[in-house]
Length: 377
Image 1: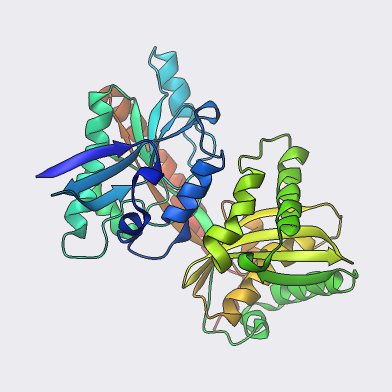
Image 2: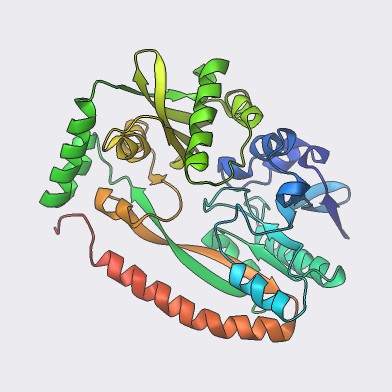
């Protein structure tokens, strides 16, 4: 008999039991990362986030789990459903709260239905998806959303779940021994442009370095957070991750966190923050208070590519959106989400609209592939 339970804090679940269910070492669904978000005030009801983690137990043993949240808005998700919310509320319904199966504030593909890699993993992933939908129906919640899924998880969601996809730009390591090998694979124009950007940054007098999170001091973490915060302030947006969260990163995740920094003397004047797994580097946040052309690309992209080559990582995923990444060696890939709308009529209407959306995404993907930055072989 499988027991379905929901937990209002990930600290209610033993870290070793949760992490044992991860099919890989993607850091964004690790107990340490999710717990750090909750403990440091990044997950709170007045910002639209309430932890509601789903766990399946058998004879008292945790056998499957999903990071799950009750959402009071659609901020911090990167799979946009604002038009759905507006349509449902115009029809007299309450779209919020909804259920979200995701890594908060992280548009990073990875495992969302944690069931290990054993022979029962597929069935347990299906059980997790069914439990989320059943809870939404029972509690009269408008919808459930599972964002940035691994392809292996898609089969867990039945036909009643709506399928969406989008485009991100990822870099693949083609067994490069050094950055020059990567440049050599590009066409002449793209190779020349990257060299010019890097040469300009090299001549500006700033010192560039990449360091692991465990070796950064409290004052360095404070400065890194201030630069992160300034990026949001400049755009009039809200910085969701607190200083306390940044201060906890080196201790909780160690060198799974990497930071590319530009120094003017002893001062950190720009930074790009990354997380990494055994085979993938993930770009997350940028901040700077100097205006140096090309510095953003140097820290966010070229330092990441060099780090991936140096450490034998297979992929570099620099974050959501950004067609400009194509010219810098990042190729388009599909990302996947699944959505369960409880009301059948609403679901049918949205399903019809998604046919056109999917055709547009496919056309866009084909257009991007036709403009590959790599030289023809």
